[in-house]
Image (tube, rainbow, N blue to C red; front, side, top):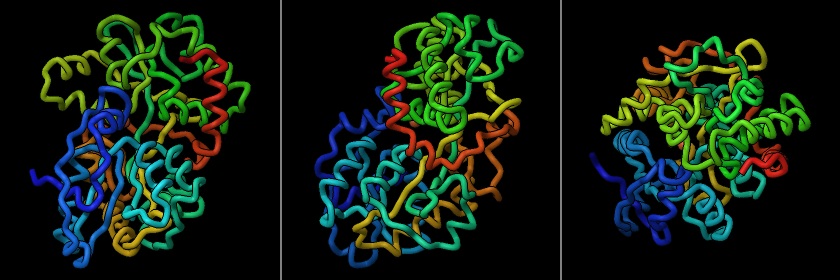
Length: 359
Ligand SMILES: [Fe+2]
């Protein structure tokens, strides 16, 4: 497939940052050599800092260029590094869009003054309100659920109910979940703070820390593999990893997911935790209109369908059906939460997890 230009911006991105993109070894990415091409900038460009590293995104950027003539220059890196870089560069930044996983991180960028509000009827129409910033500084583009996966030979779906139940004695030494450094878990706990209050969230974090099958290590996929290896019985994982493993070129990874079931917790209570990856126009964007055009394109039915079919993410555009694999798990009730809350309570979540002994 066609490699993207890394354009004007590559410079500092090292392999270590790329490897860190989504946590540890689970999301190794590749980069392309830097090229400088002032001419394409004059012809119309949008410069992107992204922590995503999926072929689907590259395909979509190419399609956008074909349709609009606007070149997409991509700098890939680890989310926090790119955010810090954006902050450090200030007005001088070349980045027009900051594109990353997790509403908590997007909120952080907003709070740091790195983004700007965007008025777009297309975005407001395409993206359900819960999945965009209340002041339109960032927009969710893909959705994921943080579910429980379980060993089908040892656990029945009837044994499972809620996130809260995983903190009970029944699951002592059986729960696999990654570290509290990870923003997905921070956002999970932030959602509990918002919905249930800080005391209940802390009690949960303590229960989970006590029920862990091992000290946290690796990414979400490693938790799934550890379930199959018999280290624990259940794991907490984002849904798209299930699809990625199932469609892996490594037959061992395919075998792993064949032994796992997907369970949507809290269906009888306050819903399964969802999060987004998304993007915001940077405060000092030099190509603001092009950046908005790219956001609008990525929220379109066509692009939303591709995110789901090829990368197993849920569409944020309600007119688009999830891919077959996702649909096969059934519909589910989500937490009723504006995702800005995840950012609002991030610092509290980190503190509380530390106090709970969640490594
Ligand atoms: Fe991820």
